[in-house]
Length: 166
Image (cartoon, rainbow, N blue to C red; front, top):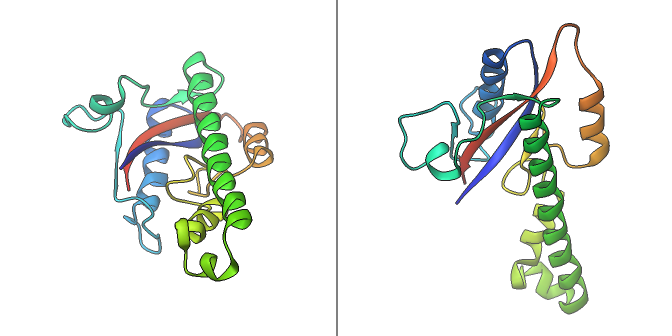
């Protein structure tokens, strides 16, 4: 399956933002030492050679955009809405399992109950689409707000999308 994930990174230029974003995505696909693969591979939106991923799959998204720009605001809103919807979907599955399943059924993962529990608690992977520049999943609004408020000197917060397979 495919989805779009986003990295929020500090950078001075679009090129630096893309490079930092690619470092985040490299960590998430296990390309760096001591990183754990939670996605199979990624394609950023600057890649023109692919006919099945990135722009070919999702349309013409920016390679990187300052979050204060119209494109950046749109990407950030899209990422946050996806985050909330995915969390709510998995939380509803957990609530339903707790109401309808016995402890033994949950233990046996009937109806994929334990899988839903795992996805609600996940900090990386398919239930998380927004990451900071350390490849940490942004799971709640407080974390996102802190990142948007903290800026290094002469740096801008950018959002970098990538098409990932899992």
